[in-house]
Length: 157
Image (tube, rainbow, N blue to C red):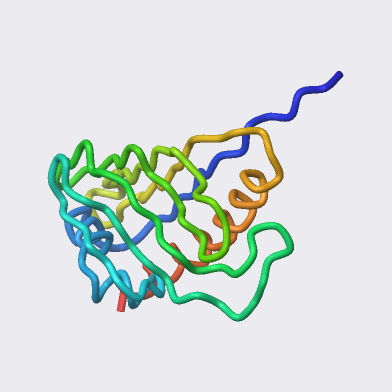
């Protein structure tokens, strides 16, 4: 009997911008709207700060998750300027079904090339064996690829 591995998110990109500017884009509502299509954001880059972002609800229905969009929320447990942040007790609240969580969400910025560029690493962990969790990771993996590419374009203009 083969065991399926737990899905998780690990996405990264190299951006020609300093770490503090990149981290700012994860917390400023206007920036989140520009690169991640977030409709509303309540985020605070400090320990015990909220990290809540909401996307518009789609007309499209995923066969497992229902309509997409909804809210991702958690609590900032660590924030280190110039390096990254960690959000614990994170949940995705889809518009039409039960919450998916708890999860951990982490963003790490590592300067490279003599501080001319920064490697941005986004990871998300947390899983229960069921089709909804597996589908969630499939959907967000594609979403993060597109979002990180948009973040790069926004910050390198």
